[in-house]
Length: 194
Length: 194
Image (cartoon, rainbow over all chains, first blue to last red; front, side, top):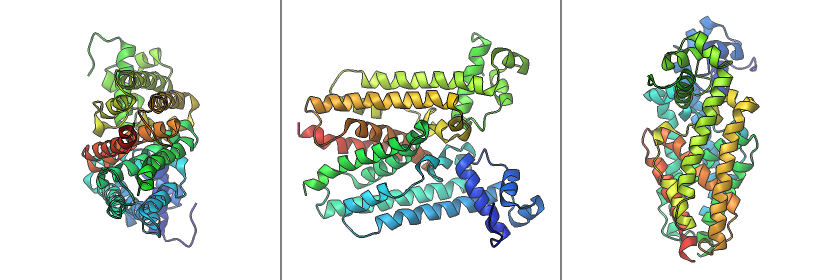
C-alpha cells in the first residue's frame, strides 16, 4: 500500500492515520495496521510500544497537517471576512469527515489523556486563531454588531465539524455546503454595514 | 442493568442504544449487548436476527426520540427566533454527544443503506423543520436579510453537531455553549432590525 521509499515507521504511521480516519481508534487493530503497512508484527513492536504509541504519532501528524491547512487560509491576504471565507471554502474531502474531529467520538481516545491531548490542542488552537481573525475584523470595523470573537470562532469551527456529520448522514456533500453558505450569509450583513 | 419489568426485546434494544451511543457500531459486540441486557445468546437470536437487526431497532428508537425532543422546542409557543433559541438551548448531555450524529462516523453504519436510513431521515427531517421555522421568521419580517432558510437551517444543525465534537475534545461543555451563543448573536441582528 505504501511506497518502498518510505521507512518502516513512516509506513506504519501513514497506515495508522488512514485506518484511524476510516474506522476510528476502536475499529483499528494492530493486525490491520501491519497488513496495510506491509510490516510484520515483530517489526511494528520494534518501532512502537503498541497501538496507543503508534496512534499518538499518527494523531500528532494529522493534527499538525490540519493546523497547517487552516493557517494557509487564515494567514493569507485579504480582509477578515475573506480569510474566514477562504477557510470555510477550502478544499475538503467532505464525505470522509475530519480526521481529527472524528476521533472525539472514540471513547478510548477521549478517555486517554495522552491521545486526547493533540486533538484538544489543535482544535483549541484553531478556535483561538479564528477568534483572532474575527477580532481583527471587529477592531477594523469590517465586522460589526455585538459579536464575541471567541463565541463566533466556536460557531465557525462547529459549523465545519457538524457539516461533516450532516454530509455523511446523507451521503452527499450538500448539507456541508449549505451549512457553510448559511454561516457566510449570517456573517456577511455585519461586514456589509462597515 | 435494566428493570425486570422490561421485556427481553426491550432490554436488548435499550442496552444496544446505550452501547451504540458510547462505543459506536464498530465498537459494539453482540456479547457486550447480551451482558448489558442480562440476556443469553440464544434468547437474543430468538428475538433479533443479528447485530444489524438489533442496531436498526435501537437506531430507529433513538432517532424517534431525537425528533420528538427537537419538536418540543421548535413546535412550542413564541417567535421563530425564540423557538430556534429554545431548540439550541434545550437541555443536552453535551459530553456524551449526539446519539444519532455520532453514528455518521461509523463506517459500517454509513456503508449499510438500511442502518444509515433512519440517521439520514431524522437529520433531514430536523433540517426541514428548522428551515420551516426560519422561513416563518423571514415571511413575518422577524428575521431579515438575504437569508436562505434551508442554508441557515443546515448552519443551525451543524453548529449543534459540531459543538458536541468541540466539547468532547476539551472534556468540557464550554465550546458547545460558545458555539451556540455565537450563532444566536449572529441570528439576532436580523431579528433586531424587524
